[in-house]
Image (cartoon, rainbow, N blue to C red):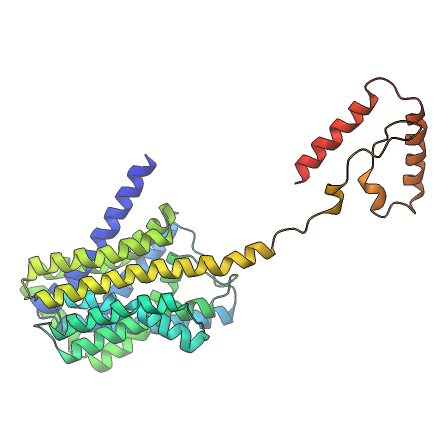
Length: 384
């Protein structure tokens, strides 16, 4: 049953991710609704409402913001998050889904570059070498893209860089005590994003509400398509949360690489956008570089943790090298008390106990030493 749940969650994550991409493209291209900021506003409204409903249904626990400082950090993250979404949707106005997915696959390159600039975090030469195929592949795909558009290309690259910047910034700003689960963070950031996007829509896209109303009256499926698209934007994050819960973050990363390829293939089949052999090969090289980067980074982290794990090992205890029985004296074998050398010499109660033990040892009875040794050996085993 658990395996079936995992498979269903992964399939739901794939479906919601790919469908929201295709619907974004269809709304911005098919219906001629050329307002990416307004579209992002619809997404954030749905995410904010549905995230709150999900918390009421006990699907997840809505964690509370603990301080004003934490709230300001989430506001800053929301600004970066919001900008990446708007630019990502804007790129779909000018570029096919397949090419935007190829550009999105370069996220590890921007993450490594921004981590070096912001955190002065250096990776191994192997990790940096694995990024070369990512750059070479996207250069090949860009040069051979038949539907290349400079505005869309700049928007897609900026959106990818901002997504990488958000992941780095999130790790820097939110400490361990301030970190929220995925859906709690989404609930707060989407609500803040609604407040940020409303004035932007009024300033940059003042005609969008009128066009929205006109398309709703003229096309029967426009409003249902927009509503489904906005709802799927939330389910992308919900299934992302569930996939991580049922599997792991590494599995999510691997599935994400494969998801981009599947989305590109389906978009070409639906929208019939032209592709070239060089562009396809370039995209494959990019994806291969991302996989190599993930493996190299994992190996690098394991090498870094090895000395730390070795240094954390406990120092050898000298008492373990000493026998549990003292050499035989005239009174016979006497059990050595490890606590006697641990600072009890000045304790009168300990001295009295030792004297009684010495007195008992003068008249040993059969099996007495065995009865005293066995508990000590079991105690030693349980303390290791």
